[in-house]
Image 1 (cartoon, helix red, strand yellow):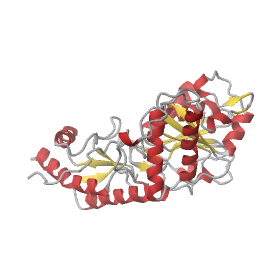
Image 2 (cartoon, rainbow, N blue to C red):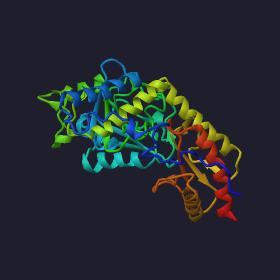
Image 3 (cartoon, helix red, strand yellow):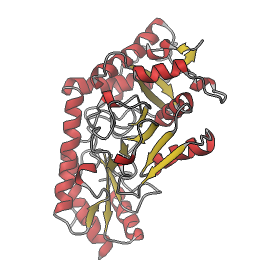
Image 4 (cartoon, helix red, strand yellow):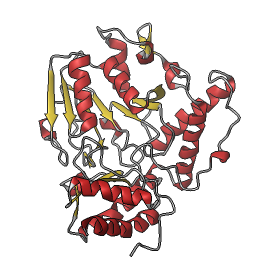
Length: 371
C-alpha cells in the first residue's frame, strides 16, 4: 500500500536546491529592486552579502570574497584563466565536472605540462600522488558522484603551487580547511538554496600574489578580468561586480545567509547535512537492493547523496517517474553521465523529517517496479 505520509517539501534536487525551511519570497527586502547595483543602496547590499559570507565561512584575514557571473562554472573559469600557466598543473577528476575542468585546461587553455589524476564514479584518485609543486585543480565534493575528499590532510601546507577548489556543493555543508585552499568557487544555488546564475570566488593572499605577478598569455574577456594595472581590482571584493547582477538573487542569498546565522552559522549547517546523510545511511544499511555509489564511508557526500539500485536502468526511470507523479520526490534521478540510480540532496535546506517521510515511498516505488 502507498505510505500515508508525504514529505511536506518534495524538492530534493541537487541544483538548484531546495529553498530554506520557512522561506517566503514576500519576506525578501525589495527596496533595492529597480535600483542600480552601483547606487549607494545597491553597493551596500552587495557589500553586506560579501561581508556576511566572510563571517559565516570564518575565512582567515586577507581572504577575499567576490560575486562573479555565470554560477560556479563562471567562477572556476575565471580562476583557471587568470591563474594557471606559470607552473605545471595536476587536475583531479572522478566525476563529470572534474572531467570538464580537464577539458578546459587541455583543449581551451592548451597547457602542455598537465597531469590527470582520475578515478571512476564511486572512487577517488590517489591523493598521495598529487605534486604540490604544481598548481592543483580539484572538486571538494563530486556533485554527480556523491564522492568527496575526506578532509584536507592530503594537501601540503608547504605547497609551492596553488590549490584551486571547485567547492560548490561542499562549502557551508562540509568543514573546509581554508589554510589549505588558495581559491574556492561555489554557487549559492547549491547548499544555501539560492537562485542560479551567480558565482562566488574566494581568493587567498597567495592567489592574489599570483594575480599580481603573472599575466596570462591568452586574451582575457572582460568578465574574467580581476586586475587593473597589474594590481588586484579590489572593488570586485568589496561589493562591486564585473557585470550587472540580479539584485533579487542577491537579497535572496542574504536571506539564506541570515537564516544560517540564526541557526548558529556554518557549524549548524554542517550538522544538519550530516544528520540528513545519517538518515539515508540507516536506510541503505537495512536494504539489500540499494547501495551508496561512493564505496568508502569517509568519502560519502553529505549533500549530493548518490545511490545505485539492483534493478535495470528502465526500472530506475520508472521508479523516479512514480515518485514524481506522487508528488513525493522531484528531480532525484542520477546525473546523466553517472551510473543509473538516485541522487537525493541532503544539504542543510532539506528537513530531516522530509527525508524520513520519503523513505517508505522509496520502498513502495521499488516494489511497484519489481512486481
